[in-house]
Length: 213
Image (tube, rainbow, N blue to C red; front, side, top):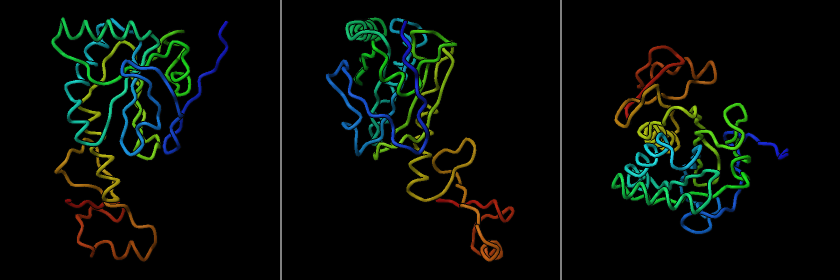
């Protein structure tokens, strides 16, 4: 019996390093230094929900690249299965998958990233998505049930929000999209609270102020 234990990575810490075989040759986390990386797992090849997700990721691939972000898929299936599946997607749906897919038969990467949840399936990775920044730091994790597909447009929005926060030292409100007002960090001292109303922000209360970029 396989008794290997899955770990669970932590936000704002270094993402687990890996070296893996993919449909585009060997890949490691170090290969993506200086770029954002979206690493995402799927339960199995030749499954309908996963097929729609791969098509969705591919349709947004140029958008991600324009944001200095690469895509990297993963499942427990073999390279041969990955290659046959992507060929099927090209032939049946007219979409050519341009990003690599990791072969993870031994489940090394899946366990390191907490992609395998025994309650969902013993030998399949759940729909997990990880955003890793150019410094190799894990910035966001999103988990979906095996029965429901992800929203790729939401991942575009989330990446835009994180990059905007990094560049401007601000936060973004619910549903934020580029062009909307952003949230100014709240004051941290009594003196700063007293000054907040006169700082030119759209201040609703001392802790809640917004501004345009």
